[in-house]
Image 1 (cartoon, rainbow, N blue to C red):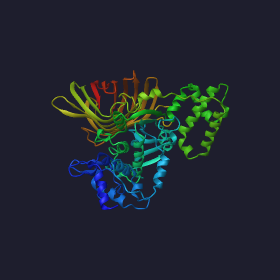
Image 2 (tube, rainbow, N blue to C red):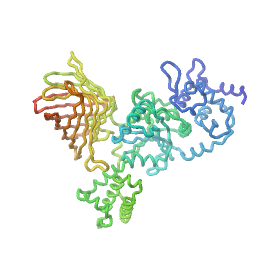
Image 3 (tube, rainbow, N blue to C red):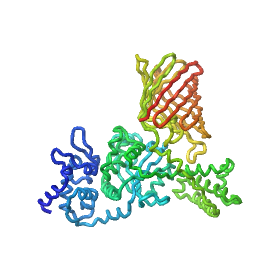
Image 4 (cartoon, rainbow, N blue to C red):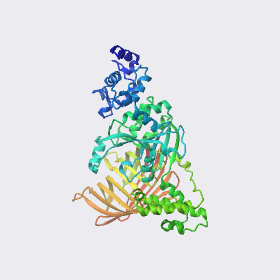
Length: 602
């Protein structure tokens, strides 16, 4: 192509696409290259891979990158791996959509066509994998993409779809290096397209997490654009920031690149991005076409076990070892017992099954053969009732607190803010029951003359697991931060760590727990730096209604002189706000306090 022909192409493009002086570059071009406008002017792409750009200055200059794209089309490399038509099909689509007349393509893009055929995308889903407190990186949930091979969902066919994930390549970093690099962008983040059944196995089967699929309103043209852009991202990486530019954030940048009229990223917090927040943004944009739910094996197991009596539940280990001995006079009951035994084995021994342990595989085979001999269809629970509990329906992740505290004859006004996410007395719609995960929570107090920090938490976690839980029956809690308490009539400020490991039992309407505890904290007024303290808690969380919950706790701390206390809490919680009351009594000294508080989620 001659220089004159190149000039014709430039003139046929909209002037906004060329970013002539005084004009903003085309918004679609900016989103396609992941440019962000800078405070002091100019642009900077969030993409960090050198091969993602054709111009040496492409990361900072949309204009130079566009000029380099046009030049590379004029001087095509005949190698498939280097040919611009094959490397950047989404950018080529954008040029054609903008009205550019492009030169003939000189190289066949076999790998690109194979990728398009393999994906065969006809629909787009955002999938939310539920909260998983056993892994800190997954405590807030996880989102990834699913490219469906049918226009509308077909039950049971989703396993042939393609999963698209964005994740950090962390290698074998230690905990400190992992945390530091994760917060400072020290890990490369990469997009990967893998079979959806592999994602189901990872999250649904191995980690026992429910999966929520949100089908999006995308046209076929937009879906094709998304697939081509995903191909371009395969040769790129982004610096991964756990708090901001994470898996959920870049799912939205991928959507915006394919559907440029969307304004998703601008609605997110600048300080952190949570998966549930991105779902709410997608809903607000009117993108959700339909929603479906895939239960974890643990949830299915709970439904199956509800059909059995306590005596029958206790018989499951015996049936697992010797399924042939099961009486089959009542075929429906026998089928339910074998279903429960098979699910229990697959959940409890999932690692051994993956490692193809001979004995475990033999037990599984015997159970499957015994089940196949009973011509009774397994019941299919209806999970539609859970759709109202979907992760986009819960309370907002940030919370403001205002209240009044009466302590030792003094009155204090309290106020605070929580960065994220949920505590056990909040409205549990869309959240895991009997769990807390609070990050960057601080509460102050003032009497009009003084201001003091009442408590703060860098992280505060609670996970009450039922004794009959499939994988781990241990309950636990952990907290790092500062708090005030009473010790023999004196108020103290503590800074440090506290935690516990114990057992809990879930009954109808309540959860009872017993948890030995340990503290390692610096205490104000102490002659030594850090005091280790042991103790224990016995408590009950009660669910009076869907919105009204209570908590009663008897605790003991051994600091040379045992200090006991009674704690009672009551909270009425909706999605938007909550009202709570709390009392604390120290029987040894007669000291007591009372607090009223209001909470607002935003």
